Image (cartoon, rainbow, N blue to C red; front, side, top):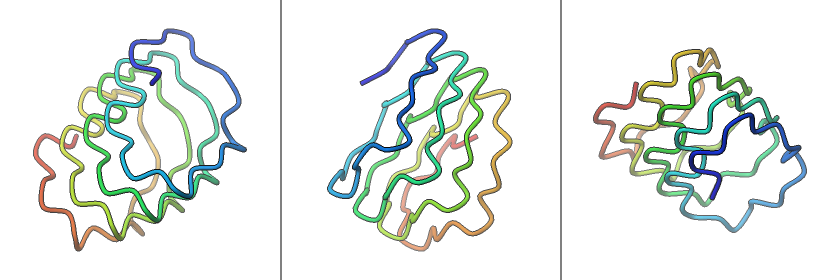
Length: 102
């Protein structure tokens, strides 16, 4: 969707994501990405692979994302060199692929 977008600073905080199941590659290689995604409803998402891969200046709080249904997180943050969000509360019990996640 926003793959390869440079200097991406649009406000996506109010996006209705409750029915989204696939977020793969959504912001891949989007450099300088600073939009607030903290309130996104990710309960139905099953695929987050490559979502932020190569997003070199990615800063957003993802600590409250509901990840209980995600099965694929492969390469999700690979080469996202500035990523600092706390993911310690993520439920990864259903994830079957975390290869190269970071």
